[in-house]
Length: 122
Image 1 (cartoon, rainbow, N blue to C red):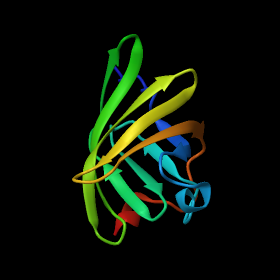
Image 2: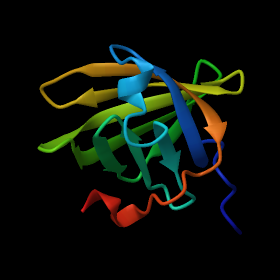
Image 3: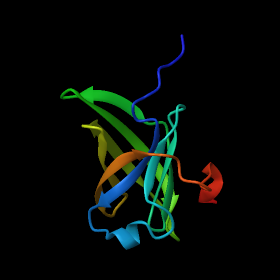
């Protein structure tokens, strides 16, 4: 039996993030977070680029939630955890940088950004 597509699958444009102005948030590309059918993902905002591991989904208080760990960089290595919630056609979430900031964001479903490949972290 084929695994059903997760509601989280696809690209989501990050439209706002705590502590970030639009110009900085979208410095290199339109800020985004993306999850694929294999449970992997990636995100980029400002000059922070990261890949996520196998995200885990569950329901809590009748809302769909996904949790993930991530590794990335902004010129120096970064890692952390994050989670996202789907409600009302939008995604809200938090990206936590290990020993650093907790960044809350809002994202809306979008097309995948052009020219961004899984290997872009290199």
